[in-house]
Image (cartoon, rainbow, N blue to C red; front, top):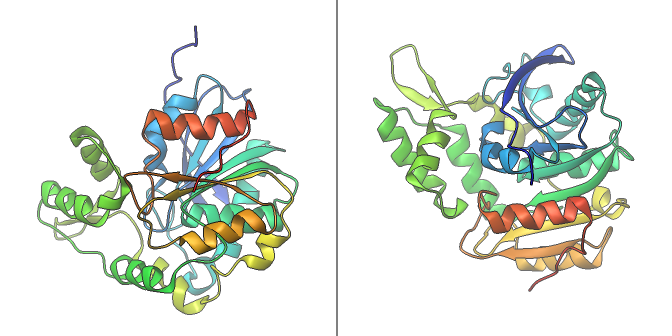
Length: 291
């Protein structure tokens, strides 16, 4: 019988002179899994996932610079980009004493993992899971993400912010009322006028202006030599079926699993999604490849 999940722990570390917040689950002696969130999200998106894995794994869920409880960038144009995030990830692993890790990345978190595995973290990432992310992303979907991320609205009540999150993140799939409330409470900050808004620095969206080629990662992809599992939301407009197929055929030749009932990006909050990833990380059986 598995032991009960270890309670979440909250930590702060200085990485390249900027304070990053992370939550951590599981025994510190257990094999480590880095779970890195998407563009405008926080590490708390992985609460259900991390709790489920914590009896067997040490799961570390950072807030990216400028998101959640992490410090905001001092030089936004230079720091809000994949290369700086990878450098901070390297510093994070070094401080935690982690020579080898598995990496589970949702959207932007997957891109950080891909670039990291091809560069500064080469040989340190054992297995890579990309949650609705690939080396090429659909331009119209990226433009929509940039538009809403760069102009976060504010609301007079937390309930109104939750309604907003339910609308823009409807493609995450099935979340219970309790999960929507938890997502909202972990994703807000209060402004000086008392209104509430998403918990990130709007300047982080300028990545698309200052680093327009950041998410064109085929060169990095083709250099990878580690096992990769890609989860693609069935209705995803960001990761196209054509790109997913190319990921099967090029570079590390990823296993691709299509996740029904969601788009960008699967919330990784169902038993089926979690079990799919855990089997891949444990290498208990080959990851499935589905149309």
